Each structure stands twice: as C-alpha cells, then as structure tokens.
Image (tube, rainbow, N blue to C red; front, top):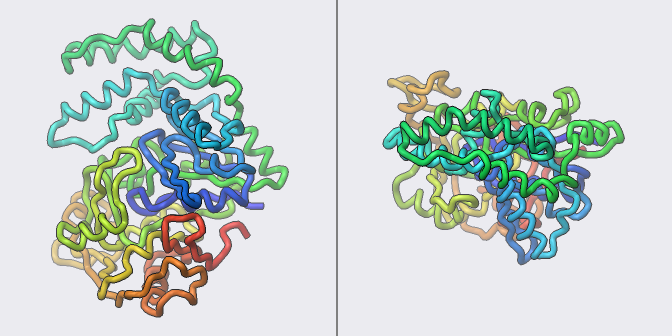
Amino acid sequence: MPAVVVVGAQWGDEGKGKATDQLSSQVDYVVKFNGGNNAGHTVVVGEEKYALHLLPSGILSPGCTPVIGNGVVVDLEVLFAELDGLSARGVDVSKLLVSSGAHLIPSYNRTLDKVTERFLGKRQIGTTGRGIGPTYADKMARVGIRVQDVFDEKILRQKVEGALVQKNQLLLKVYNRRAVDVDEVTAELLSYAERLRPMVADTSLVLNQALDEGRTVVFEAGQAAMLDVDHGTYPFVTSSSATAGGACTGSGVGPTRIDRVVGVVKAYTTRVGEGPFPTELHDDAGERLRSVGGEYGTTTGRPRRCGWYDAVVARFASRVNGLTDLVLTKLDVLTGLEKIPVCVAYEVDGRRVDEMPPNQTDFHHARPVYEELDGWSEDISGAREFSDLPDAAQRYVLALEEMSGARISSIGVGPDRAATIVRHSLLD
C-alpha cells in the first residue's frame, strides 16, 4: 500500500483539505508535516462544514489516525480549542498523535510576529501574526521549545529563559513593549502538559512501522509550493518546507518510502498576502471569481487575490515536487464564462519565457501570455464521470493537463466531499 504526499501546487487555498479528506476514508494515517495554525482547510461533509487550522484533515475520518509531525509548529491553546470544538460536534479526536519533536509556539512569538510586521510598514510580508515565523526562526537558531520539553519543568524554564534573553531586549529597546516574564510563559506551557501527554509519541517510528505493515499513509502539506521557504516567491513565503521534500524531513519518513506525490490546483489561481502574482485580476472578472468561489481565508477571513490559471506556476510545482498526479478543484466556479484565459507563458523585458524566471525581479515584472479557451454554461455540480462534463469543460481540463506537467486524476465540481470526478485512483 502506498505512501502519498499531497501538496498545494499554487499559493495555497487550493482545496488540499478536501483532497486529503477524500483519501483519508481509504487510508490508515494522515500526517501534517509542516506549518501551523496559519494554514486553514475547509472540509464539507454532507450538511456539515469544518474549518481546520492546525489539525490534519484525516481527523474527520473515523478509521484514520491523524498525526502532527515533527515539522509542524504547535500552538497548544489553538490545538485544544480545535479539539474541543470538534468533540462538541461529535467528532472522535481520541486517535490524534503529536510528535515529541514538534516545536511549540510560545506567547512571546505571537507578540513578536505582530509587532515586527507592523514595524516593517510598507515592507510587510503579510503574515497571519500567529507566531509561525518567529517559532521556525527559533528552531533554526536552536533556541526553540519542543513538545517534549513541557514534561520537564527544569528544562522548560531554562529554554524559555534562554530564548527571552534576546527577545526581551528587542521588545523593550526596539519595539517599546514590556518584557515577557519567564515564570508566566513557563506556567502557561506547563498547564497543558497532562492533557497533552497521552497524545505524544515517536511519530517517526509509528509511521515507519505502519508502512512496514503495509498500511497506507497520506502526508498533508500546509501552504503550497509557491509559498515554500526555499522554492517559493521569497521573501513573500511561509517559514517551512511546503513542498514534497518537507514531507520527509517533517515526519521522519525517508524519501524512498514515498510512492506518489499529488499536487492540488484550482481551475484558476488565488493568493493571500503580499508578493508577485502575474495573473492577478483587478477587475470584475477577479471579483466574480472571489464571489462565486467564496475566496476568503479559512484562518484569517482575508479576501483572496484572484487570477486566471497559471500553467507556468503549475509546471514549476510539478518539477520541484516531482508530481505524479494533479487534483483540479473548483472547476464549477468557471461555469458561465464565455471565454477562459489561461496563462501559458510570461513576457519579461520583451521576451517570452515559458518556465519560471530564476530571479525574483523578473518574476515581479512578468506579464502573462494568455491563450483563451471556450467556456461552458451547463451546471456541472452533479457530474461524477468525466464524460458527464460539457465538451468545453472536458477540453479545458485536458488543456490544463497538457500544460501542467502531470496527469489530472481528480476534478472537484463542488464543495461537498462527494462532488468529485475520479479519472485515476490516487492509491493504486
């Protein structure tokens, strides 16, 4: 049975939650391997709509074990609030496993995230202000606090004290804020220890043993390829590895164990936050995509920037992730358009560029080169076979497949879990 990585192939919000949720009903483990509560997934099951922020989508499937891997940064207050919210709605959350090596988001990093962003002014990155970036910075600077530290008060206090030596100087002397008290932070983190303890495991060992036993594991990325800290539109990126390679480092499962890499793309493109976006629309067409597609952030509620499908971005994501399959979502949002432009290349300084420019300046100045495809007016929300789609919708899907570097194996035609056309199984 396979190990499957599911990643966003644009700038996030592509519908990874729905894609993972559909797989989770057929698999044994779903692993979140990067990010934190800065990335939200919306999953619709029947009449119920769930907004997940920190938890893996697999938590909604009774037979699946959800796992928070070592590559995730965890806000314990958010974790337990989300668990309590799901429990109140009848969802069994008792199977959740949390890596002992995952890093925790202390309150001072949420404070630093917000004041730093305000301090940057016009140079803001557009963060969610949830402490994600500062916590990953602490991890790399080796002053981070991990899940396992809350079970040893002496070590925890030492680590908090060490982290605050510099941070309090920044808060006091640069940002004109009050210093953070070591005892307050330590006490807050310790208050979660007993509730957290039963969930904590060596998740790398658990997952490798599961694969040895022939179990199926899905690795679920937060954010997306174009927000990856190494391969995205730096510096307007997230602070973690959101590409397929991050599944290995963020879970402790080696690359030779991965069987399939699935990229999720919308039938158009959206982005939240700052940074270049070649196909962005500032007209009625962009507003239509936002309105019909419900393009508002699951976590932040911010309106998403909207634009046409960008095949250059899709090809880039296919390359850096080694995609074997694509899941195309929200095809139904395009219903009613007479013509649908698709970006097939860029114009940079008067020359055509068919692949992602290697430097940020060129990408910032890139102008989309469009091809127009025929639209359709028929309602496709009830389609369950590819042949059920209007001819123009079929041609649109096949054109995107040819341009994007991987086969389109699944097509979303509505928000519900069942509103999907499966062309190829993702688990065979």
